Length: 214
Image (cartoon, rainbow, N blue to C red; front, top):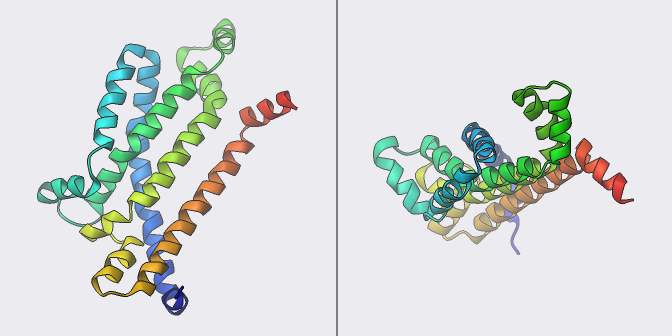
């Protein structure tokens, strides 16, 4: 394997990695704005669960290049359409795991919270969310890692990021550039996945479960 480009242009690779992280962070932040209320909504009203997940599943099946091309006329090129597409793709994993985490909380814990005089909002924020946190973080981990991978395609519309190395490497027939992009993207995805797994295990609910098992 030829790692010359990765070594000789490490500053450029680091710059594109930072662009990639910024792009993914914006997309996940936008996705959470919609995913958290949707997860709470379909937990409170289970009848909406199937239809909501079917719609989000249908969005997820849209080919990424087709989705990006669809947004070019109204939005244009660059980061904005990329963020919209990535946020839309993240919805399915986020909403599904948020609903599963909130629904999986022990009913006795909820009854106890109401018994001590908590409101529905207080029960959600002080009991349900902390107990569901491991599942919520697992959903975010899946969504973030998937977003890091999908964000490589958005370089096609000049959104920046590590995908630029892949597209430019293909255009100019430079295998070392393609390899540099592949290594950087893989390292970023694996590193973020490992970090979020550690965070997931450090939550109070996960530690309590581990202690109960041991």
